[in-house]
Image 1 (spheres, one colour):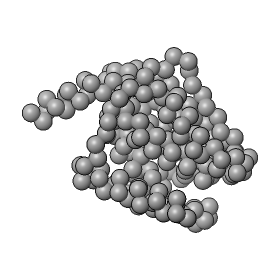
Image 2 (spheres, helix red, strand yellow):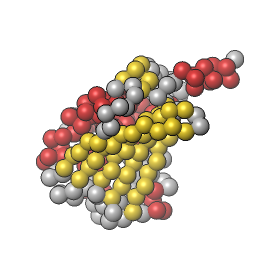
Image 3 (tube, helix red, strand yellow):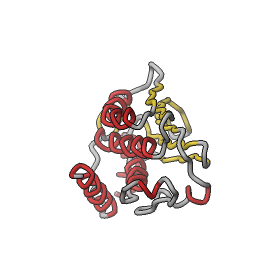
Image 4 (cartoon, one colour):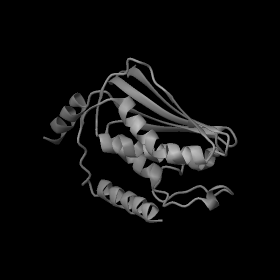
Length: 195
């Protein structure tokens, strides 16, 4: 109960800091596999207790990413916790990472895919709003503030990234986020715009 309360308080404080523009990220090179394995280690017992398979899919040649380790880990923990919470026993949660190139440069895309209850299209639009939770038979037994996805979206956007949710009722959900491999050019552009 104490851990649950602490997690709720931390979510509220983090969201308040972001909204006040006081959340400072520390960008440093990190290995995606390390931060994913760190987050997975923290939720593995919950997945095992829920009777879920937890799988990782990584290519060997992923580049290091300039990102805030704690923020990326928080994003992954939120996505993994939701996937585990809403996937019935015998299901599967898969974390996948891949490098992609688009007009803005090289990016890393990390997705968390589950075989859970899924989300209706109308509900998807509301999901990343602060304090929004989708009402369903399953969600009534789950506790939370409804801040997890809003916080996740904000932390991803602070990295110059984007969050993408794809789902259908009864077919599971895939939540993915992509972040730039290098923050340098983006941060310089922001400094130039502010000057």
